[in-house]
Length: 177
Image (cartoon, rainbow, N blue to C red; front, side):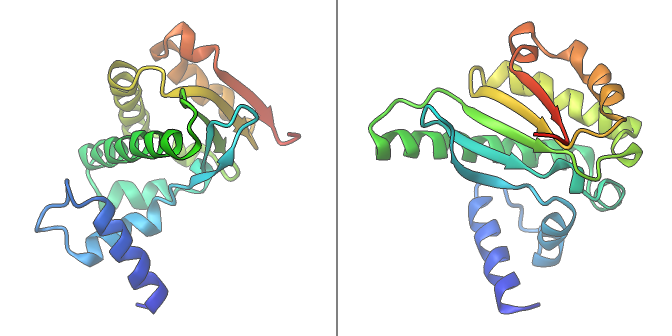
């Protein structure tokens, strides 16, 4: 493992310290970093709110499904959302402006049928239900870029589980954004 990878792994472990189990050794955690390139905050939108860039299309979904349990994926997403809330709070304190929600950019480049397996769809639906129930108004807008031809199928699976308010925040740009 390179020095850079060790630094990234150390930061990852620190950020997850409140949920990391003793049995989660470095090799286990490093698998997350390989199969779940989560993205991160990349700037501010026009109103000064934070923008989170999610590289969903580049996820190694088959590898993730072999490496971890669905419950672990959902727990990881909860950890990410808790970090998002902390980041939004820190951003508001730093800028002196109340920040209501964030803009999420989902980059679906390389998104394909491997992302549409039944276990993945079920986990995503579980996550959406939990997200809407426990993190109201954290989402200002969702911008989907590089949406491939299979995206309408995926969205039709997810759409019934979204509130009307959340559905109205989704903007699909395809590859010509």
